[in-house]
Amino acid sequence: MKIAADKGQQAGKHEVKHNWLKQNGHELLELPLPVGDYIEITEAVQSVIDRRGDKLKKMDFMGVVKVSVDTKKDLQEVVGNIQGKSHARFRDECILAQQNGIKLYILVEHGGKITSLESVKDWKNPRQFLYERKIRKEFGIPKGTDFQTEVAELKSHGAKIVRGPTTGEELYKAMVTMQEKYGVEWVFCDKKETGKRIVELLGGISSEKNRQYFK
Image (tube, rainbow, N blue to C red; front, side, top):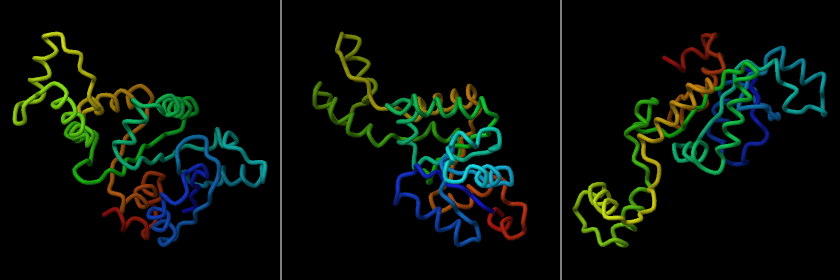
């Protein structure tokens, strides 16, 4: 399969998946992509590349790209995309894909027990520990007591407590909303499997050679 990787990706952070793709017979080119990080270079896409040459711009692919895969290194990055400073950019990309008939898969390379959208509910945000430690110290909450109960009690007496980091439950609900509203699809994998998952999602498992990787 001939695959285009977005040339806007940060250098040096994608070697594992890119090496897997090259080692397993897939040709990888860097091109400006309208949405996502990876697309298949179909005949229609190749014709745009040939026609535009060095004048190629990402919007030239609108109308010929049908599927794109966007990768996220972990759930912490997803938090930033949905509830952080990069929310507007991420939302606009989802809308752009939706309006132009592009199926956008968002492949989260978190690994471990995060294997489905449902499993995001059980995610423990690593920032929660630091937050709890700070609040316990600030308000004199004893160690060993239930943190949420103590915080609720303090708030009932008028204490102003800064909101904590996003929980797994909150992130799950936000991701479901994005999926339902914009038609994106969340997919999950371990980092060492990202390359073959990209091929699978782009539809490149028709040959016997590729099919063996997805048994």
